[in-house]
Image 1 (tube, rainbow, N blue to C red):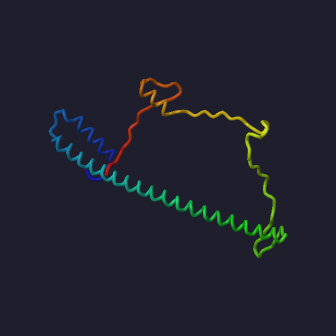
Image 2: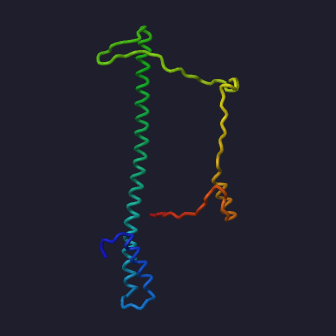
Image 3: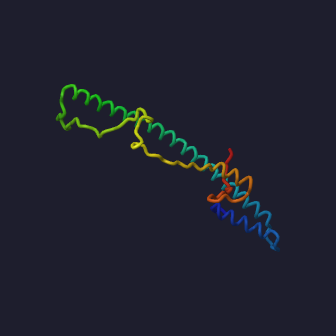
Length: 165
């Protein structure tokens, strides 16, 4: 029985359990024990792999955070250098400069607007939005309490696998 997949082992185990009451010359108890042992080995190996992959995912998350912080530092450095050159060109009264391989030019940015007192703005500049938040927790609690379907929602109780060390 070497080399069986978890799916195949589960299927053999289920079939042997079904045959347990039938007349057969096989020693079903031994066969069930053998398959159960292989099933346990396979599940243990899969659980080890899952734990290893969870650790790898965590390490990637840490590395992503580190790289995101590094990218932010690089972006800040770029903004600082551009501001430094802009300040110096403006102080020198220059709008265009050929600097070796690069042509550097001071130009106007698109207009921007900062709101400092929203209450003082005329209504013509305001847009009203309606935001509806759905309280899923309340829907689940109502479903659990009554057992009845909530119109517009589908509540279900799923199962998941938890692996303990």
